[in-house]
Length: 228
Image (cartoon, rainbow, N blue to C red; front, side, top):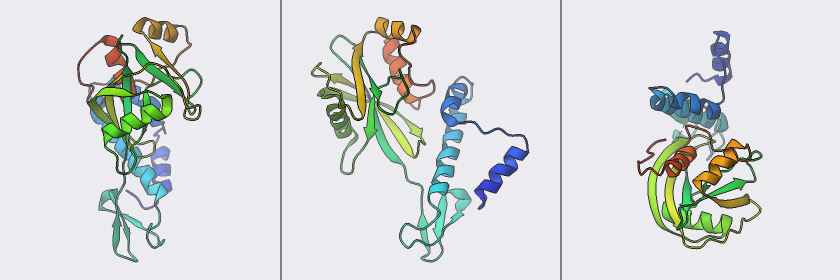
C-alpha cells in the first residue's frame, strides 16, 4: 500500500478507473460466478483503506505511524510498536414468532421505508448469544429463545464482522425504544411481499447477510447462509 494513499487513488483514477461505493456494489458482485471472492477482496480493501485513513498516529504516544507488511500493519518507529487493524463484532438476528412471522424494524439511521433485522455491537465481556438477548430486549422489549448461529459476513462500515443468528420470540408485544428503533412489526411472507411490491417497504440490499437471513425465512429454507 502506498504511503501517500491520496496520490495512489489519484493515479488509479487517472488511469481510467471509477470510484464506486461498496454497499451497492455488493449486489453486483453477488450475481457473478466468482462474486464471493470479489466480495472478500473488496471488503478487505475497503476495511484496510479506512483503517489506514483513521490511524495515522500511534494510539499510545501520538507519533506518526507508517504502513508495513503490505499494509496489514502500521509501525510506530518512535516506540517500535506495531498496530494491527481491529474488527468489531456485531450481531444480527432474524427473530420469528410461533406462527413463523418475521420481526422487521426501522432504525433511526435508515432511509425512509427501509426495514431489516435487529442488530448491534457486542459489548466487552459479552458472548454473541448474550448480545442477541440484550439487543432484542433493549430495542423492542422482547425476550427470545432457541438462539441459533447461522453465519457471518465481513462488514467494513466501518470495521465490523456481522455474526448472524436466528431466534424465536418468547413474547409478542413490541416496544421500540424510539431512539435506535423507530418502528417494528411482525410480518407474514404475504404481507412482506405486498409491502415491498407496493413500495411501502425497502429490504436490505442483496449481497448482505441481512438480506440472506430474510430470504432464507422468506423461502422457508433451512440452508446455511454462510458468508452471505
